[in-house]
Image (cartoon, rainbow, N blue to C red; front, side, top):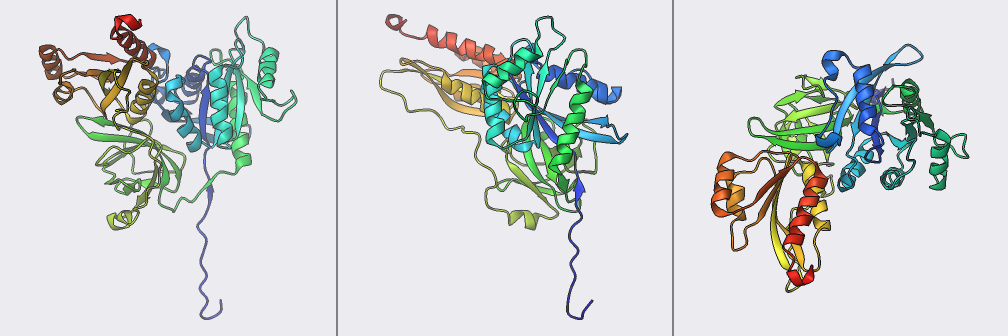
Amino acid sequence: MKKGITTVTAPKLKSRPPVVVVVGHIDHGKSTLLDYIRQTTMAKNEAGPPRREAGGITQRVSAYEVKHRGQDGEEKTITFLDTPGHAAFSSLRERSTKIADLAIVVVSAEEGVKAQTLEALTVVTSTGLPYLVAINKIDRPNSSVDRTKQSLAENNILVEGYGGTIPWVAISAKTGQGITELLELILLMAELAELTTTPSAVAQGFILEATRDPRVGIITTLIIKNGTLQSGDFLTTGTIIGRIKKLENFLGQPVDQLQASSPAVVLGLPTMPEAGAVFVSTKDKKTAETITESISEILLNNSPTNNFAEGVTIIPLILKADNVGSLEALTKEVKKLGTETVALSIINSSIGQITENDVKLGLGTSPALIVGFNIRVEKSATELAEKHGVMIKTFDIIYHLSEWLTEEITRRTPVSEV
């Protein structure tokens, strides 16, 4: 080496597992597929019971890792994101496709392409995300793979062997037929994508969801896309800075560090982060404080809706939910409801159980409706609400909530307008 010349060694790159998002119509078997994969690729003490929300519908984003031994005999990891199917959660699905490396579009071999299939495909293709099609429910007597391919083609989705280049596989999420081929195809597509990480770098990634636990504070779930996240690191979203007090893997086990493509659970952020926000980890607070520019778009709008025409009956509404993603979906759903004569006005929305303070906030000349999603109601809140005639309703399925609000709007519509 010549005098005066310094040689800098480039950071070492390493391949990383793919992050895969599963999208499709609400009842075409996305969660059943992921349940099967999880139960057959994880140890019994890891897999746990099938992950189901109320009514069998996934209503939040979930992330977990599975292991699959490929044809070369090497065991490889795949990180899966399970996204909600209900239309109200479209923004959650959109975020997940931006976070993922590739997508599986699940289509029923019985029903073919549906409206939510097309919605999911629009989101996937708009982000440039590579994807494959899984034709599910081939075990059903009325299923037809050829008919499903035709349905796809009619919607300009041309799979391999049917005039196009989109990879596909026929599967049964119930019996497991074709699942091995699906996992092999995922790993092949990941290999072609040449996904890499720099293990020595500080971690970067995305916030998946966040919730508030009354015992331990804010619990944040995130996906690492590069570098290594360590317990004790400072984590910033550009607007929030917090030190990681506890780091857990997707199984809820305490760990010292996690690598790229891993789901992580973090305790220590001082305020609720926005779902979908980019995060960066640093080793010291001073460095974190220099990251002042916002590195994520504002995804959650909690501002009250007050621009109503004169003479419209206003129903004040307080929304409470279990996490940021659910609250965003509720807000979006509520804004679609209402008529020319009756409107819903969100006066407050937040995370956590319904408390006495929520009831106090809802008191007024026209007491607010307090609606909760996947949360509990404190006893003191129930007692105060009953005393002052404030209505509290909780739900665990979003369309039940929408139906109830629609009925309430109808009930409050002036008789002459019904």
